Amino acid sequence: MSFLLDENVPAKFQELLKNNGYKVEHINSKHKGMTDKEVLAYAYKNKQIIISQDFDFCQLRQREHWGIIKISGKIENPLDILLKLLKHLNGQPLKDVYVQVDRYEK
Image (cartoon, rainbow, N blue to C red; front, side, top):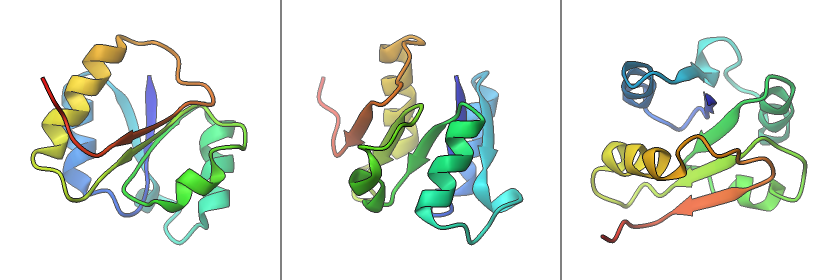
């Protein structure tokens, strides 16, 4: 799985994902200031799953994409929850799937 972190996602997400064997790019590293539509197109071209805390991607989910994971900024331990989600998905493709993470329940 390859991920593109939106500009509102803290850099610590990138480090955590890399340390867990995922390929990850932060949009701020080369493309800061892109519109959400441009981010979606860039991620699609590069077969990347977008991780964002921006609700605007919900409105773009009807467009073709390799996956969008929206993490709520209000949940505790978002990094741990993201890793649990990815472990649960077990590499399943997320093509055109929108996942919104508001909480985690066991």
